[in-house]
Length: 478
Ligand code: NAD
Image (cartoon, rainbow, N blue to C red; front, top):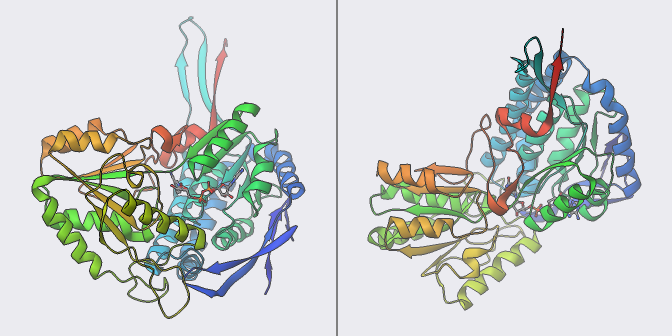
């Protein structure tokens, strides 16, 4: 099988080692073999990005626009093939995967436009006769570290703004899903980025990631992943006094009030909690339900789950694909055991499933009769496991929703304008959804959370400029 190489300093290169990318729907299917870089190769990529920065940071905005647009166009043209690759390596269903690929294209398209729209400000000074100018400059070499659950969209929403605003890039994708990252890198390279501007360094977090964290030539790091790794990124960035941005875990609440439209609430809950196999940082893992609708809601969700099709991600009709790998499956099943031992009632699912091929298939699990202190309500599981918590009324629901170290996304299903408005204002999450799943966001508006879910400026949309540029204030006495 051909080796998919890293792209460092303008050349495709073998790694220190190589690893097979395994299809979680069929563990006998090897998606491809991918290089894993050494520490020295990561440092070579950083040196190349540093050397390329002065010229790229002053390159014309037309050049940057055209490159990003070309990337977007090629992704759109190849959406089915790239979607298949993504579904095959990560396990989300083919329609979800094609949707994610298109999202990546939309992001590159959006930021190709942003290259032409970057504006500054000119203001009068408080001292007569002096002009004040505010401009945005690129930050320098940006290190990009991404997780496995959105193998093309998350890289896109970091790489596109980094390049658009004139930064150079060292990109380290998650080692579990290098296929989509490699395909994206190949497209970016062929779109014409000059040597050193964009580097792909696949490999282990403990090798490539660690080399990036500890290299003073990296000026900023944008990271998405777990809280544990995020803390390491933060500590290293503080040590080097560099800019950083972290997007991490969630334990997102969905509140369902007595006055909710039951059909809407069930759709929103099943989609938010279980689609994409629950492997979304924005998944609704806590369903907080008021007592008047509780029993009807649990019965309707359970009935819906009985008909959900869990199968091979590439099969037509599959609604939920497999868990990404054995380690994540072990984590999911261990939390199902923990929930049982804590006294929660397993109202549905939680069994391993056999399908035509050997894969990591898990029936979605729904716990009821859970309480706020249980670990299944406090810790991120990151699988198709959700728990229902019964509460008396809106006030208790809001308090339960905010009773978490996380604060990424929060939802409410209600027909009450008063409660919707109050929840939007008082939820301690970065993103709030009314009658919509906690997962599922637009690409032209800010994305991010509060508390342990996020740190630093928001990602996506125009707000991305906050992280990927630095403001300069210039005073002139003409
Ligand atoms: P992870 O923290 O294990 O890995 C994330 C990335 O960090 C990977 O590329 C990994 O190789 C790298 N890494 C690991 N150790 C490192 C080290 N010592 N130094 C530098 N880099 C290192 O996370 P994961 O398991 O890939 O992803 C799942 C997590 O990501 C979940 O917690 C999920 O909630 C979170 N996530 C958050 C968002 C968001 O936007 N908030 C989006 C998607 C996923």
